[in-house]
Length: 256
Image (tube, rainbow, N blue to C red):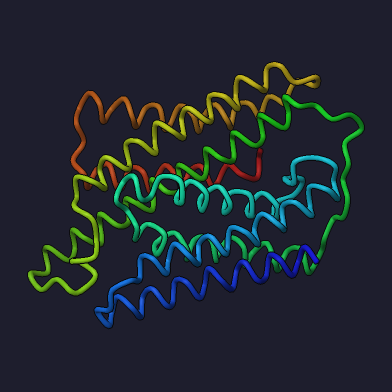
């Protein structure tokens, strides 16, 4: 049943992206409302999948790469739903859905080809669960920051083309995108800091490589935030930096 929940969720996100693009190209209103509704529906089935896997393992369902990708996708969606309207970034969902669809498609293939099955812990360590959950929630915030960067680059290209399309008039002002990237970076660093601190209270201290990788991701994002505060990066520089930093974060997943 958990595989079915994941497949339904993935199809919902794909349908939401396609319908939103068609709506925007046709100049029809209400795509943002539809986008949010489908995101909520997709989140429900994501949550059902994670609940089933959590009950199977008796712990937070992040015991293999496929589950980790789904958890990050869940983090992206839930942070978007919590903060998207506050940042006036309703289209952030349209841009994030392809990433969620890609991550979950990889997870479906991985689980259908080889599902490791139940992996219950010998003893449940709440600090380990907190470390893992906060770290992956941080990746969700970092992912949304990178997606906001993509939105800025799309808007910038539309402006420079001197023939902006319908998408340009649906995108939020550059100021909103810049503020969103900054706040998402701060949220991500805060969540990752909690995850790293929790690691030091775990019953079994994490491997040096694992802690080094987590620390490296934190340093990269903290450095990016510091540089922006001191040097006042241009929106384009901040956008590119957010995208590159998230790419680096994704490369470290195999070591987490």
